[in-house]
Figure: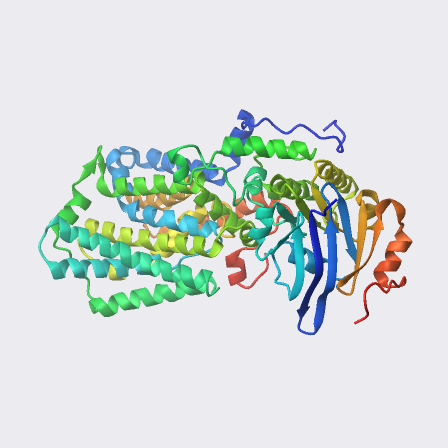
Length: 255
Length: 356
């Protein structure tokens, strides 16, 4: 099976720091791939590169088998790639529906649409659909997002991402700020998204979570992918060993 | 909630349920402020009777409010983006000087003279507003500083051009419009203001443009990430506010028949006070056009009422100050409870150099 998104030899330096050093990545449709690594291993840089938020020094990206250039966030959006950032990027004063459709409002039918009027009814309907799809606990579509719990906000951000991403979703530490129950909900949401055939890239520091939902785990260290494990065949010790370099792989030539 | 948290609870029906709509209306600051206004009006109506509570008096009040209302429309947009515009009074003076000069230079009383005058006022206002917006959005200078600069510069230039002497307007078709013309029984100035307020309210509350305005004030970074052209939006809003100051200039020329160079030093603060009394958050992301209108009426009604019942009108300033601070305090406490933990990134709070 061709990977839906594949990156080869991505490199990017910031001054003398090689944030990405010929790093590879691949994910298939309907798969959850966890991207793990110590701080500074290049996870976030990788996500930025694959979502059009970072210019690369070198490297090639393939989408559904064809080479693509992802230079701006809208390039990524056009391909069906969405990112849920760590800070969620929600507008706290707006309601979940407005947040979900922010920047992509459905215009009202006919002449009113030309003047910038919106079809709020249709947007609410689709937002409700979206929240029901991930089985979230978002109860009100008309209260401001800022008045909701961290878990609910996380769900809104995820629901927004998967409402627009029909191919790949990046989740950057989606459970970092959440309690036990809310984490549970997010993990369940991830599985539901995967079951809809969408590729999910999960960045997390929590090994138990990674082991629970990830089909494959790609370990990054010092700007490159050092190894890939099957989620069902690995354990915390092995992952930590690969992250810290206690296990040495000698993959690729030494620089 | 009796359901366990892990099961998915049904989301409320697609259409807003009646109860929550009422709750929402009651929770809006502008509604409480409307209550305050009603109490003030009732007080003066009882204290002064028909002298205060007459169509004539309210007609006079709305006449005096018209220009502030026009300016308030722009200011509401600006403050919802977490910005501020201190320059509107000076821009108004500048526009009125240019407009009056042009009309005097052409001479006569033709409609097209008035047309040129109106156009000049709108264009100069828009230019100042655009400059404000450009410096705020592109050069990233805090709005407080930029508009403080244009407050000073626009007034200074207006005085340079006019030698500091007011210019009177001879075009009677303009002054007649301000004094005699009526539309469906409403004097021209309040009528124009009403139209602007309604258009502004619809644009703010019903269109994409308005929603982006809230979004930018609520979380500028998030707005950028979803592809909203934040810089362009801010420039448009400041330019619109400047244009409305230009319209205000025309209305004042029509009302007084002369420029009012020395008379606008507090206009900006009066408008800002009205917007804030009306419940619009100085930190952005929240507010309403209706609130601004109510916020305008409170000082005006106080002023008129004090005069009629024979209290020194200077007390109006004291009362408005108290209402302003109280209104913001009540609003802030109430909303802090509702928006606990919400990320605030106000442009103004950044401008003032403190994290909120």
